[in-house]
Length: 139
Ligand SMILES: [Cu+2]
Image (cartoon, rainbow, N blue to C red; front, side, top):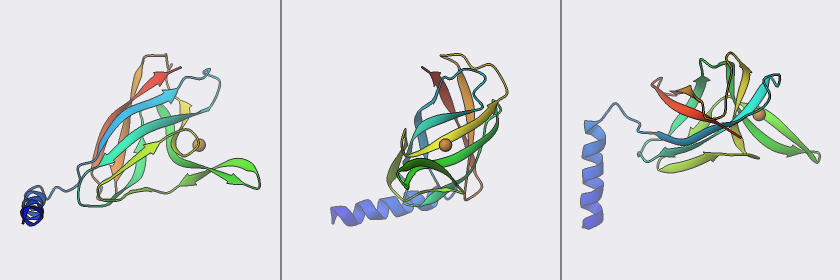
């Protein structure tokens, strides 16, 4: 009975906020590298507590020419990165973008990046809503 009422409450709440997804981001950071290096990796924790799956389909930052989604893979005993078109966030899931796994690839900085600075990252979802989070420049 408790489960049923929880489920009912969830359904009611869910329909009340039909704007939909409720993804949150935390602990975003970029590894500091010399300005001459054109690409740097970024990491982020993602939480999708909602009952809906959603995908990240595009990334943008005013601080970089381009932001891509990448995954590090082993191929023929070599570490290799492939570009992903999207990242799926299943319902009630958490995902950590981290070294050696899925990560952000930030290409050609458009401004000086100093340790302790934060740059915005705009995230577009498959329902075409967007959210902005901050990425901290760290050592
Ligand atoms: Cu990469």
